[in-house]
Length: 376
Length: 257
Ligand code: HEM
Image (cartoon, rainbow over all chains, first blue to last red; front, side, top):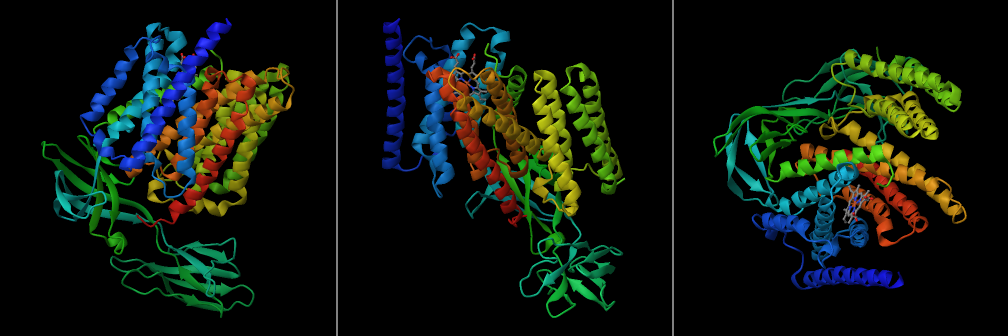
């Protein structure tokens, strides 16, 4: 008995030493070559790496390599990656995510998962192992696709004017346009805004009144409300293309029924704002209309012959092959009159695998919910 | 139908939930307790349904509207968990948390009209946040239970270990679900599912810390010693939580749209 547990202890120490050695090697590489250039994992390296990791699932558990799939190893690796990410979350300006030791730990976690899955598969019992498999296999796929797989991701920004078709985009972080394998024709850019609002402002501090609990009135024709001791009515609201919104408001001070009225406007990039003074200290002003929704009506063409019409909105990208087109920005100076739309184009051939992993782990979390802490 | 009628529906639902939960504690009347809770859920859900049909869009846009969904979902999940695991106190706890959200909606109504920037207008917003809140509730309960177990003499923890493990497993399930929904949402909104921004880093630290607990027995760490990980992981969770709040504010001030 004693001898056996001593034997286990020794192998455990050898695994600990191995992890330590790999991590130190990572630090050494970091010291010598600087941050890890992630593009070295670009296809086909990541595909080969994925195949190699999967092959680990066939390694016999009792061998030296196989023992690396043990639960003990997983705990050391998890503690190690937690410490590294604590550093990432605490020390400003670090680049842990692109560092060699972090990448090596990530790699060892994938190896540990592949080995432990293989061990379970050798003597697989659905009822006992389904939860384990969903969680660990799902996580394995997710880690492979989101880690080395993401080295194949490409990201461009493209500015398109209404009525134009554009083939060129700028790579993330660069200013030189390149020709892309897809083009976007912008038929129309349109934008909805929330109504601007009327606010009472302290001219000295800029604070919205009543201080601490600001009250705002929606600037729509006919809307009425009370702000501090004024009853406010929006008599007219005027918002024409290319003009800043403006409202004619009437404010009645409740204490003495003094009435003040006039135009307020938030102005825009081309026109000045205007406020309505009601006392030495206070004036009524209008807030900027906030964007509610912006939409581009586009046709996307790819060199491979795909043609796709559709609307692109924030949170509603358009998919064309392995590309996704995102609504990114517009001419913010012109606001809703913008005739330009800026798109973000993302190419991510591994995205389906990422989603597969996400779905499997989601199902895995449902099994946790159902099974609770009961050990099989 | 509008927010002005909310107070009647909310008060009705809360009365049904509190009395139903109280009845659950009296084993003989469990049926009545169940009926009242379901009635409360139906009443609350019907307010959302009516509000929805009276607006031209689902009530998912303002903070006030999202709080409406939390108030419902927290009780719903608390109840489903009760049905599965028979933790009456969890049912009571979720009713109390729901009450807080209902009160905020009644006492701070001006927030109903807060505008939601386009990136937040997503179907993932509500489930993502709700699931996180549930996980937070479970992990909070597990932390208290772990501290009680540690306080007790060794060997006298009773059935606390089983309770703690259940809570951590269920809570971890929610935590992972919340994280992955966040990733899917980020992909839809920003084109990338994971960028290691500070909020994501801390969510990762939190999940990894709980994973250490889940796997601790393999490293020969005794059940009792492993309990120490739980309050530590909960500190990470709190940092993530406060970080999320902080970042939500920070996001609103970014004028990149
Ligand atoms: C979604 C995340 C994860 C969940 C929910 C999870 C859950 C679990 C559970 C419940 C067990 C015990 C299974 C049993 O008692 O039969 C287990 C075992 C194990 N897990 Fe995980 N785990 C996760 C992630 C990981 C990660 C990231 C690693 C690698 C670092 C890992 C490595 C292992 C290993 C090596 C075992 C031992 C399996 C055995 O010896 O049969 N797990 N995991």
